[in-house]
Image (cartoon, rainbow, N blue to C red; front, top):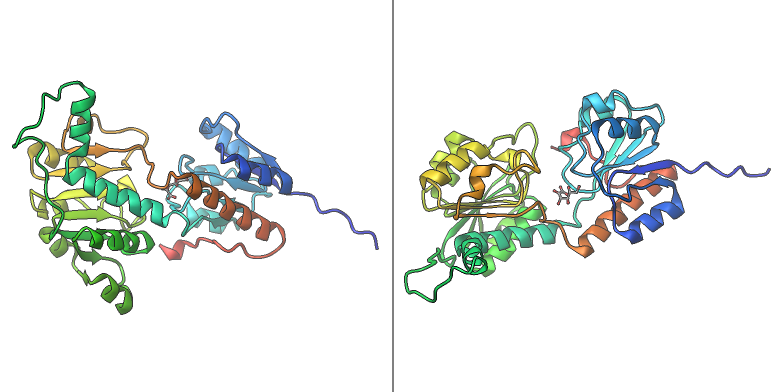
Length: 331
Ligand code: 8YV
């Protein structure tokens, strides 16, 4: 019997990906790219879900129930380029029979590097120092200038002890920090003993005792404003906070008020509650280090993320279950 060539699925990619990944996508599928890399408007996104078999979005696309309600019958897979999936309404996707995949694991070490870099930069006032030199305002060394806090012997509280939290803990131990953590579930005793990590069932109690707090949990309905105004107030005024996860986990307005009032010593932020907007009051503060959501931005990481997207689409197109399926119940 003659075999009929199977029609290639139409894959719509919302942003420009590394060229090696785009080339492979074009070879394997009927692929529509975004050469300009301009984020899609709401109307363009709706157009994409109406026509695609597979959508490859990123964190900059809001795929909410309004968008998904317009999805065409062909859309069967959303293969997101990234680990966090809070930009996708997972319940509505499931109800409509659309599989969602992500790219876990490949950005763990890079994001942990960035968390540690922000701890160092914030505690040692690297942002303020860099700005001083760049502004041509440095007049010379002084015994009392640019004094930060020593890391050695301090306590780090990690909120969210998943892959990234654990990778951060490994780094932090090398800097002489003691490791404390709060997580939905206590981690395996072997991991706790490897990291000499202390588990705090009560986030409130942990926050009150930490010198450094790092946010490393996903943003879900349960973690929205987990670090609320009330909880932030429990922290020591000498403490610093670092966030490479999602801005929504912290009540950003409350944090800004406390930083301005000197009720928190500093913050190192890679993510914001209303990206890409940054609260203008943060820009006025010398005690904060502000980065543009670049925690996973390495060349290697982006390629590996793209490879995961390719594998997820290819296994799906071949009639199998893609490996990185995301279920609403996972969060
Ligand atoms: C990614 C991230 O770059 O993967 C994540 O969850 O936050 C980022 O590091 C981004 O999501 C890509 O879509």
